[in-house]
Image (cartoon, rainbow, N blue to C red; front, side, top):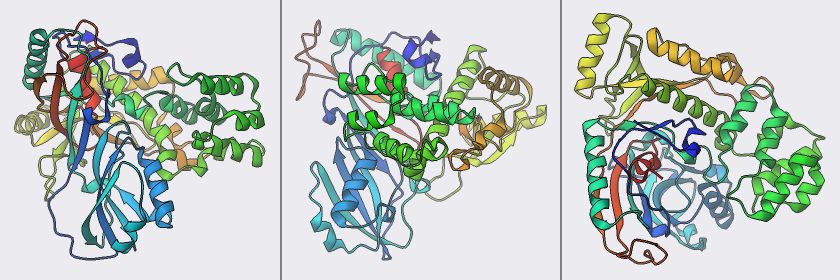
Length: 446
C-alpha cells in the first residue's frame, strides 16, 4: 500500500489500495469530461399522482436545481423527490418525481442547461431505495506522463483492482465538501455537544480554494463574531450561510436550532459526514493491520446479497450476521467467495454496538481516539441532527474499463510536457452511495 497525500488523510483515507504509479492529470476541465447516469430497473409507469421525469443537467447543484424548478413551477420543493444527489461540475442524468403536476405545466420550465424528459406517472415517488447504481464516464486530462507510460500505468492499476476484487469503499471527498471539506468537522462538534462551534465552523472557517472576498468575510466573522456585519459582507450566493445568520440575529443567538432552516437532507449531512470520517479511519486501520476486505475474520459482521427484484447482487445491510465462531466464519466466507455476502464496517450512531475480536478492537481504538460515545450521536441539544447509525460494505466492487484518447474538444492546450494532448477515458458503474473519486484517485495518485 502507498501512503495517501495529506488532503486524503484529512478525511480518513490513509492509503492507496494499488501500488502501481499513477498517471497524474486533472479532472473536470470541462463538464463534458464527467458524465453520470443513474441506473434503474426497467419498469412501465402506468399512472398515478407522481409525474416521473428524467432530468439531464449540466453544472447544476441538486438543491439549487430543485429550488429553481419549484419556483418556475410555482410549487413547494417538498413535492419534488429524487434518489441521489449528483455532482455539480458534471453532466448528470437522474430521475425525479413531481407530485400532482400535469405534464403540460413543464412548459413553464426555462432553466439553462437542463433537459427534462417525461417517463410516465406512478403512485410512488422515487427514493434512494429505487436506485440500482450510477454509471460513470470520466476523462482525465493533462496527464503527467506520455501516452505509452499512461497506458502502462492504467493497465497495471486496472489489473490490481481486478485481482483485489475491487477497492476500499472509502467515502470520497464530495462527502465532506470539495472546496471546503468542513462538514465532518461541523458534525464532530455537534456530536461532542459544542453547537456554537459547529455553527461557526460551518459559517466562518475559511479554506484556501475559496474566492478572496469570501475568505475575508469568513475570517472576519471567525475573529470578531459580528453576525450583523457578516450578513452584510456574505454574498447572496452563500444562501445557506445567510439563512443561518438571519436565524441567529432574529433568535438572539439560538445556535441549537441554527440549522433547522435547511432541508432535512442537509441538516443530517453534518453528523453523517462525521460518521463517514470515522468509517474511513476504521477502514484505514484495518488496512494497516493487513486484514482482508474480501473475506471475514473472527468478529466481523457481514451482510447478505439482496434478493429484491432488480437489486439482486447488491449488498443488503438490513440483513447482517456476525462471524463470532469458527463455524459461522467458515459459512460466511463460503458465501463471500460466491459474492453472496459482503464484509461490512460500522457507521457509528446511537444504536450501534462494537464488533467482537480484532475488528471490535479497531473500532474501539478509533472511537476512543475521537473521544465520543454512541450516545453522543443523539445530539442532545437538537435530536433532529442526530443519527442512529448503520453499516456499510467495506469493499467497493468495481470493474473499470479504459482507453487512451487523442486530444478532444476543450483539450490539453495548457498541458506542459504532454505535447500529444492525450487523455484517459475511464468507464465504470458503482452501487448507490459509493464515490467515483475513490476509483479515480487510484489512477491519478495526485
